[in-house]
Amino acid sequence: MGIDLILIALVIIWIIFGTSYLRWHPFFVLLISALGLAFLLGTPLQEIPGVINLGFGKMFQNIGLLILFGSFIGSALEASHATKTIARSILKKLRFLPLPFVLSGLGYLVSIPVFCDAAFVILAPLTKKLALGNPFKRNGLSIALSTGLFSAHVLVPPTPGPLAAASNLGLTNLYLLLLGGGAFALILMFIGAGYAFYLFRKKPHNSEEHIPEVQVEEAEEEHSHPAFMPAIIPLALPIVLMALAACTPFFKTDATVLLTGLIEFCGDPVIALLIGVLTAFYLCLRQKIAIQEIIESGIRQAAPILLITAMGGALGTVIQQANLTQGIDLSAFNTGIGLAIPFLLAAILKSAQGSSTVAMITVSSIMLPLLAAMGLDSEIGKVWVILAIGAGSVTVSHANDSYFWIVSQLGDMTVKQAYRTHTFATFLQGVLGFLILLAAYNLWLLGN
Image 1 (cartoon, rainbow, N blue to C red):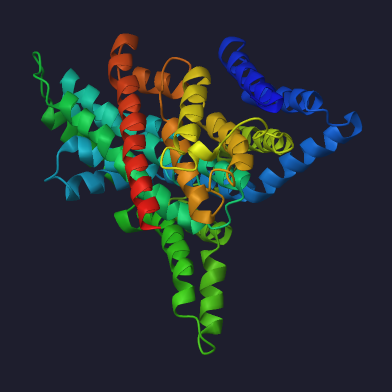
Image 2 (image 1 turned 90 degrees about the horizontal axis):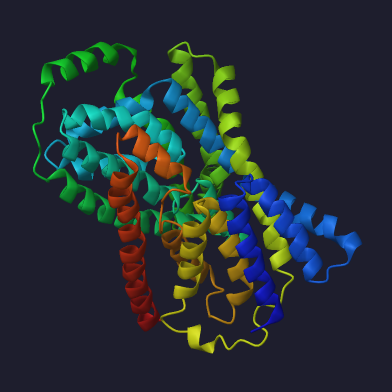
């Protein structure tokens, strides 16, 4: 095994130890990791600050505005109660479907612009209302929501994890990741929803229903909520614009060059999200909510994530200087099992230190120098790797993950119940999701 790979393993152990046992902030742990690894790799001392600054700035440049704008949209939707409007409208329109699948789908949609922790806080009261005092239904609905939120959080831009992984791997086609990540996240969502449905259908014990009380409360709150269409536009418009921009090569001619140019401008991820921000701000203005408060709230939410992802970019730049293929025959992984490497690395790191974002940043940095040897250095190959990392970064959420405690506390679960439900659900999502991904990857290899 190459000495550089051993050094990377030591850095991973340090990240686990620093974040899980010392409980230091991931930013500081990643900073020490970058400095220490650069020194161990033999980088000249006078060059180490420049390497770290380069990686930090490059990551910030690539995804900084995307994360910030996504945070602004999330803050605006929360302050204007648009999130609850979307939730109630979807529940009413999809009433014919089992509630766990509806709530899981709702979580999938909402967590694209809103961080899953914050989204669960916003929507958790809804699960209690719908459970009507039945603890089995409450647990099932809480798990449906938590797994739905988690699935999109690790796979669909503009959430930080997939954006950082795309930047580390040099993926330029974010539309491809949006399509592939969105489809794979749906698979993870259905896995979580299926298990939640099993919990939901468990036999209740002495449950009491309070239907009139729930109906009165909803009727009182509806006056301060926006209508469904204004509420959904800040979410849907950026996705539509990016999708249209991805289609412009199919109808670009001399006669349509101005139109396609405008569509491509509006469909750029940064501009599309900025348009989403403006529509969200307009929604707040109609409800007399101060935009300054939304901006300050968005910055507070985005700042820690920006610092962690940017410092992860610095570590990634240092890792890129390592020779990870020395002494290792990667030809065996230039096959259908190649995706097992990023999945297992991400699963180990996620389970050990708790943060999905840190797992995605670190593993994507490790994978970059291995892509060519594994035959995964194309744009679609990089997307396959990001999807495998995403599946691994779901596996598993337990006591060292802040999301675990949010789900358990707001879902009124004991720690034991949370391990049996939320932790087991994320295990199923990650492992079954990866097996499905591996099967799809092998079919893709056969077709190519």
